[in-house]
Length: 310
Image (cartoon, rainbow, N blue to C red; front, side, top):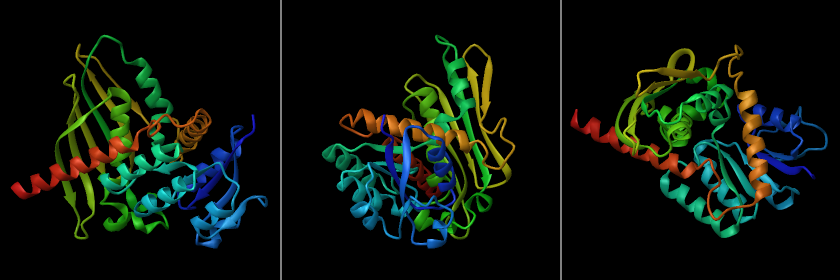
C-alpha cells in the first residue's frame, strides 16, 4: 500500500501531535508543510517541502490530502481552497466559525468528491472508547456529563488567537465545545440543545459555560466547559437508568500535560487516511463537523436569550 501523501497547513501548538502521528504511521507520509512563520520549519525532515502560503502548497506540492491546523477564523477559506483544488481535508475543530460557512464546505466537498473530515481527537481516546464499549445494551442512559476544563493560557502557548473572540469564534464554547459535544454524540447519538449559561470576561470571551441538551430517548446531557480551571480535567460521567454509574477520565495514564493527545491524534490520522482511501460518500465523512457547528450555534443562541432575560 502506497502511503497517503499529506501536507500540513499551519504549524501551531497542535501540529506536534500530527507530526508525531505521521512519523509513526504506515498509512501516510508528510511531504509538505505551510506556515508563514519560517521558524516553525527548522526541525522538519529534509525531504519535506516548505511553504509560507497555503495556495502555494496546493499549487505546487504533490499531496493527496491536507491537514488544516490554522486559527479557527481561517478554517473556512483554507478548507475551501483545498477542496476546490480537489484535495481531501482533515481540519481541526471547529469545522468553521459559522454554520453557514460549515454548510458551504460540506456542499463543496460533495461537489468535488473530496473527503471533508473534522478532527475530533477525543473520540479516539482509549478511556472514552472503553466506556462506550462497557455501556450495557438494553439499559438506557439517564444522564451524561462531559467536563472539559483547563487553563486556556497554558494550552494556547504562543497561539494567542485563542483569546481573540473574533478569531476563535467566541471562547470555550467555540473551541472546546465541539470536542465535548462530539463525545456526547459518540456515546448517545443525536442530541439537541435545551439551555445554555455562558460567562463572558471583559473582552467578550466566554471563559466558562454549561450547556444542557437532551436526546430523542430522553437522556439528560450536560456539558461543563471552563477556560480558567487550575490544571486540566477532561471527564465523562454516566448515570444509568438502573442506578449504576460509570465514567471515563480522558487523561488517565497520561501525567504529561496534553499527554493523551499523542495516541488520540494517531487515531485521527489513521481514520482520516482510511476515509480518504475509501473515498467520499456523498457528504462529510464522520465525524461530522457540521452537526457540532450547528450545536455550538444553538448553544450561543440559547446563551444570548438567557442573558437577555437576566
